[in-house]
Length: 292
Length: 340
Image 1: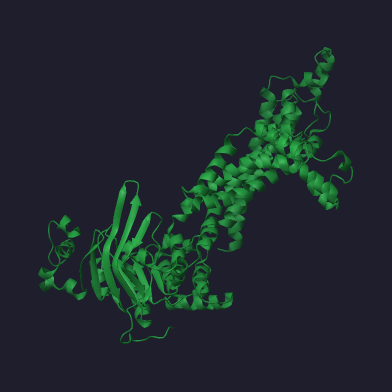
Image 2 (image 1 turned 90 degrees about the vertical axis):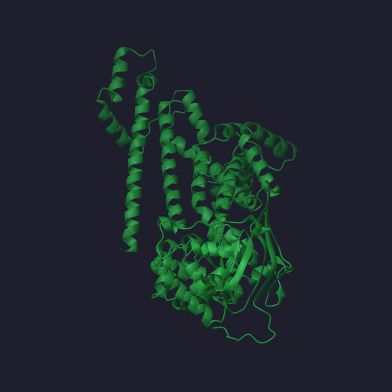
């Protein structure tokens, strides 16, 4: 396990992002996926919520330097523990990936390599960052499988992705992304592809590992209930812009609802409520002025 | 369920398929021989034979028996290795095939090897540089390889590399001086020479082989590189590629390790198809390079209505198709854990 350090006074935050922009230069014009996002992340759980296309996933990818080809990332400042990411060489950025900043992706069915055993995929993540032999990597991977509560690690190690269930696949994913002990984990809709019954188990495992290791978590989701119960702080995004940032607890606070941004109110209004059933759910109203 | 029994079941299924296909192949060749407007008796006795000689030959050939019996006899003969005698060469067809097929095998194998060794990396680089200059070059090479006629390419190759530059040997399989230095064990000249340590003969045979093999190889490169490109583009869009990058895997390993390893699964079939195509024998290339291969043999036999030779050759090509198909199926299963 990593040393768990309380953030010292004067220590820079894990991640600082100032005025992050992601633009895609396409044949039909420039698409602004993220338009000036700023936040800072400590050893906490930060939720990012918004509709599809609000730029939340692109934010995660931009931090990892994984925006695909026509995309261009700019930022006034983007720093990992005080180290400037904007000026950093791509090769250095790559070395940060997995080792310091990692990401759990949405659907284990597609995000695990289908022709490689899950164990080898975890071991690979370990061997990239540590000078370790095959045996050590295997042992660490087995330990990691155990840490994500897989009952027979030795058996599961040799299975192929198509031979494991969705829930098990997502545990493998978490094991793979956490084995090099990164400080920041981006969880991009980590439970959206899973059965409801498995979702909570996966979240619990994620929660335990993140707090045990004192990591910073960016939890990207469109599920307001989930974010509100799982995160400390929440950023609400729309059209690539931050609508507001608020403590997660206030999402549930009905008395504070009037103080919320109209978009946040809109999102909350869309949720069905068992105690107050409505014949017709509200639909979102979007104001172009918010993007000005 | 044990691993063994699963493989056993797969093997059983494959063998059944092979058996059915071979039966179909025999049926088709037999029927072709029946419907061809060539009288097999006349082919034996000539068209001025008296009626009693004709009748005797007809009985000898078993043509008075019912069709199904003739088919059974045909199958029996094929399996005992009797494909009859070629009218054109007056050799046993099996003997003829034993000399012409290795020549084609040699050419097709090297051609395919060239196609894989050059085509696959080419396709990968084209996929990772979509729309940029390496992709354009690969596209031009692909277009060139597809559309240029082999007879022209072959002649130009001979003109440039043999006549002008003298880098390679001319038409034929091996120089006269080396012809009797080694025994034909496999019939594949380069292999025979190498096996018997006749390195001068090997070099000579190889310099005869490389130009026609390259001509065939260019077609193979064109096909394989285009297919590799499209498989790789598809794989590089998959989420597991992003996941590998998130782990910190280097771009080189993402492309040549993770993505290519997945693209191999469909590529196996493509390479097998390309190989099979070359194994039929390519008449034009073989003619230009005076290469005594299957393509030329079959064409000559066809033009001379040499039915035994044509049917024997057809059977061989069919059997090779079945064999390569089976092989590519097995390799495909080994490459893809989901198909095991």
